[in-house]
Image 1 (cartoon, one colour):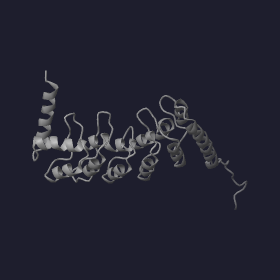
Image 2 (tube, rainbow, N blue to C red):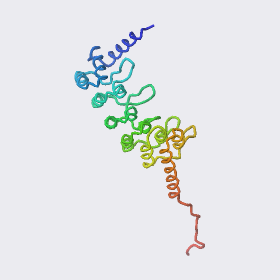
Image 3 (cartoon, rainbow, N blue to C red):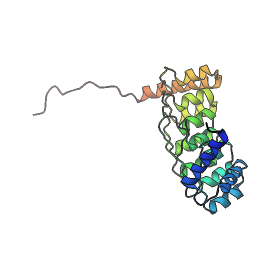
Image 4 (cartoon, one colour):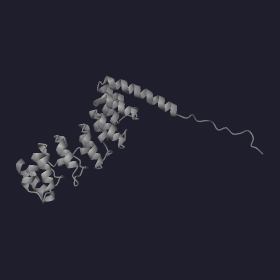
Length: 238
């Protein structure tokens, strides 16, 4: 069996063979040491010398995703600005870099990722779900302004409003309701956003959901056009 250290060296060798032909193994180590320290000077120097910004660490995590997770935000923003960067990378949980930036509330990074065409409406869990669960209203507003689908459904039918109601903040719930999120939707377990708020014992969110449901019902009633019976004249003009 491979020793763990030996396996990591093998991964490094593969990474070097695939994408680091212009950089040495020493540069590889320097790059990730600088990334962990959020040292933009060293990272910028390596990129200028041809180091691939899409390089993965020994565990297979792309540099940009690693920078968001640590977090090393200065390096993350530097990597996003690189012409060669690939922003649409996913981890084993199908999380994108944009989702991870959204759940942490990193608005400037979210803005840069979207400018680089990061997928705002990826299938399944979306960046809006993640921003809502963190209660990050500024990020949520930005995503909605950039065509994020407000009632996006996760694989089990959970919406951003449900996530905000249980895990986010009252401000996040209020924003989604004001922007037109449907409070009557339920997921595959039959749970609505209000149910999520109740389970999380979020009294403020429960009250907001009650008010939102009342407004939604009133709006649906006011927009319902009654069907008029056909009225034909008793006699056609001659």
